[in-house]
Length: 308
Image (cartoon, rainbow, N blue to C red; front, top):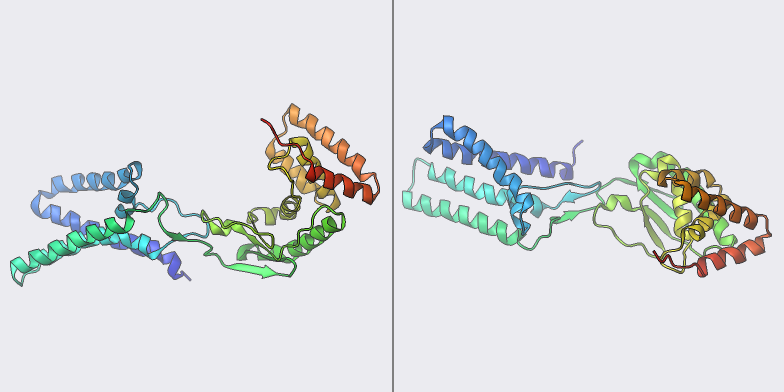
């Protein structure tokens, strides 16, 4: 069944269509319809569409140009109300002028008040908005499972959730036992549902893009990468991939690592680096666990910053 959130834009669009129809009817009352119809159709469309190419941003918002709506995003009520306020005020004023009774002066005064008030109200409300109007995010049905960490994903990925939670808990435990991380997130949730209103992660709450990775079996590898924290902001390619491949092989995520490398593209130079990475990791994995712990800690703590 449709929700109130899902109906917000369609209902606003219906009201806008009615308001524009009233405006078109008014023009048709004064201009021959054979002329008014094509002119109004073109001018109305151009006037609304052109607002997306001008600055400041408020003309597009008061015109009804909603732009794109991301996953989990819903324009707020005020965002849907502003264009209705402008067009609706003009349409309501015209309809009052058409009333067959009442003092003409009073009808003109009320109509002018509605038209001007709607226009000014819409402008003042949207004057300070950025290119993205006010919206709410996270409007997605979620399913959660487990603890330490508790994992939450969109409801349509719920069938993958139990296995994902078990594999993630095991992977984090293996990496902690190996001395590669001390991470113990309380919650891992899919940040994709936040749309453009991305919320930052914390030490105990990780927000990660998991919607596509979960059904493809790549989400656990994403957690592995997230848990291997380099001291430098950007590690060189060989160092970073050595740590990630080591972590992937320790947690049975080598297939996901290989898939990610294919997605990134392997040119001749990248293939050479990959051979070196695999040789480095094979040498490390052949050593006792204590030596592996020293290696991964040194790799994460003394990585060389990328200079390019």
